[in-house]
Image 1 (cartoon, one colour):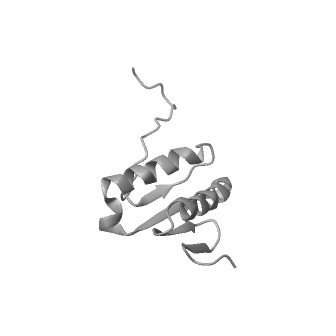
Image 2 (spheres, rainbow, N blue to C red; image 1 turned 45 degrees about the vertical axis):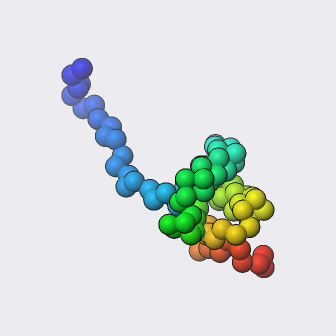
Image 3 (tube, rainbow, N blue to C red; image 1 turned 90 degrees about the vertical axis):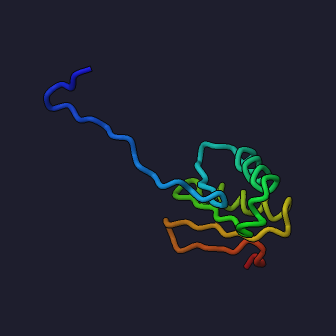
Length: 99
């Protein structure tokens, strides 16, 4: 298909491949999807290599990231992790007491 003069072409965004211990939370995706991914990584043995999870979220997904964080603490009390948001300086270690 030929491009029309003055028409913009959208290029695919290039994203680096995420590490197996990283979870990027999106607002529209339900928590069970992320829990399933964590369970799959644990069964695959990812925690023996990495030991911690990193949960990333922006904007409206920040609340969901912390919900996931709390749910992971309930289900897998021995894992380590953190939530990182670049929207505001909020980082809380998984396993640290709630202040």
